[in-house]
Image (tube, rainbow, N blue to C red; front, top):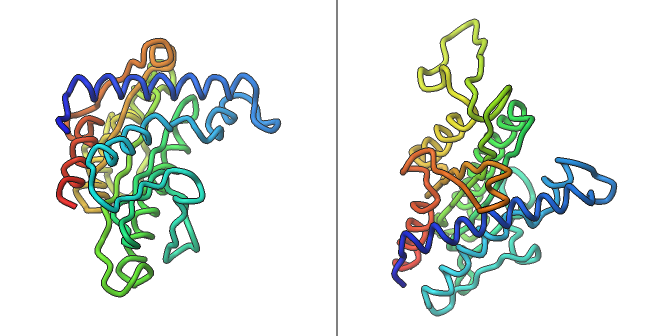
Length: 243
């Protein structure tokens, strides 16, 4: 399969648009009495478009024995610090765990506390599964699987938007210079780069998308080439062809 940049962009826009449409429908009707933004966040299928892109890559690779699990009953894996965790895509071959991918999103207006939650979830999930592999949970000599983490964040300006600089109060020591004057999108970009640089994940990606234009046309942007979704897709493809 030849990965054409235009094809990746088109598929990404379709996945972004599906995300906002699905979220919007959930917010409109609520989920089990859950109303508004929380209903959209807990609908569960918002990011299926991105999962499908990666699943289609696996199909296109045409490698014998690969099984891509995307349904709930196929994506639950044991951990070391917690009993089990549900991922978004689990790739196996004849009993060997090859790759796990997770897709997250963060929509305003509450960027503050939820950023910390997403940050800690990303780190914790990586630490848990990596420790489980090292401790023999998947077998005494099991290799470390490919780990991918991707997040879509609402691109929002205005008071407390994801583009606005965030004030910090650190009385004992100065924060790292990269965080000074950074907004939440900037913080996510730093998080993605460092999760990969420090080997928490094999690849990471950050997708910034405005709500209205995202729903209308699938509009999105990258914060950097190193954390782009196109690179995320290409890195996973490179992994697949070497399996």
